[in-house]
Image 1: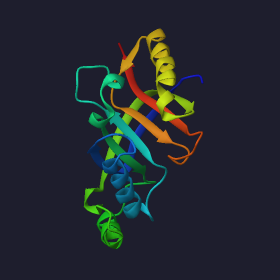
Image 2: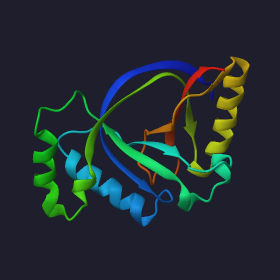
Image 3: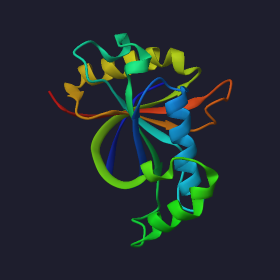
Length: 167
């Protein structure tokens, strides 16, 4: 588990934003809505995580965590494509009106592949923080995760990514 620096330019994604613990009802419903709309449009599930609190993020109760769930798109969709996908997915019963298209740029990032349960990500995050400190870097955006395996995989692999800037 060795962190690396990487650069990320504009990314087009389908997005659902919400509040609640990972795997909770709200989070699970949002994933369903994303996949219902993205059945013909999106890539692997990703998430950006944050808290609106002065405490260190990992000390905030999980039910207060905020997130953006993302499914990357190969390119900006044609006008009306997301609306058509939402309408086609409406019969699924998922809250498809929550899904929207967003574009964001993270720029320079520190990232590492975490292998193991989500509950142990704090170990990989500490390695990333040390890497950043050694290079005089500080966080410059939301914590970002790319889920390389299914969320219920017993040995998940997750890219942990943190946008950075010089201190």
